[in-house]
Image 1 (cartoon, rainbow, N blue to C red):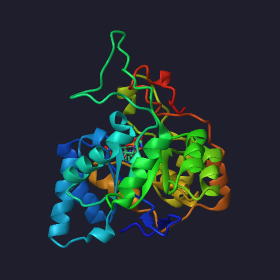
Image 2: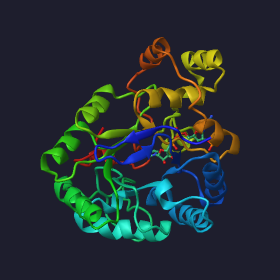
Image 3: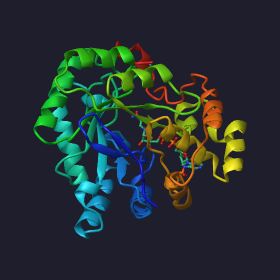
Image 4: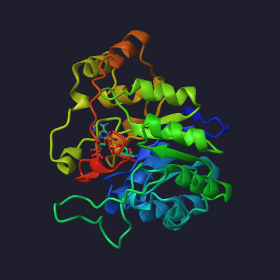
Length: 317
Ligand SMILES: NC(=O)c1ccc[n+]([C@@H]2O[C@H](COP(=O)([O-])OP(=O)(O)OC[C@H]3O[C@@H](n4cnc5c(N)ncnc54)[C@H](OP(=O)(O)O)[C@@H]3O)[C@@H](O)[C@H]2O)c1
């Protein structure tokens, strides 16, 4: 079972529409899960330095490449510039660090993880006396994007993109860039469909990847609040029953049929296989419409785990 659908960037690059998410997949789980994911046909892998698993991901990818079980061209590896690196002078250093950990010469897509910046320190993020995260408020997106273009020109990244940027922030980059962002990675699912932002990206030739497509189960422990259970939505469950699929498969297929790529995370053997088994069925127009109507503009991953981050001038939401 492989991902049989590609998202094509404006420059012709093909990215498998279904990727493997790895946030909250610690080293001891991700090694086994990534092996199983590659066996199951995943070729698009999404990671980031802040997920603290790039070294293990790199080890597994090297084993697969060295054994000739996969070629580098078949893989699509995505990583991100961390929040403590969101400044022009840090881009090359952090990308080279990720490449060393991933044991790769280039990544297929390098994202700016977030539009805001926090100071670079040894160890965890700096907190102030009020328990809020210390901010670096001099974030300069235009200079930052120039540095992103430079690492692309140097061959360290084949494509460059943005994550968690809002429309105003993206427009500013479009107005000042030589190379436009190939992809925007944002939270997207039935309860946060962001039709205007998705349409804006389509109009500007920027592809969209949905993160937290299943509602990021388990995130409530990090956020310290309840979050809605997408898998329990009655419309989703009814369509799943009708098509003899799981609720997760309906949520993922809904995104693919909207032309949005997605990167569900699972370290469970059965669930990660289910999540890529999306290519032998489709949701009809009437049910797509019912799913579209579930939008409630409810954001789950609001970065509430960075207390005080909403005070940053470039906080996007
Ligand atoms: N750019 C960003 O700022 C950003 C932010 C968030 C996420 N991401 C990326 O997007 C990926 C996906 O988002 P996410 O991890 O937040 O959430 P998600 O993929 O929506 O949900 C993951 C959770 O759902 C469970 N799950 C997976 N498949 C399932 C299934 N078929 N049925 C029931 N439960 C299932 C997983 O548990 P098990 O592992 O136990 O199956 C895990 O608890 C991340 O891993 C990361 O790569 C990016």
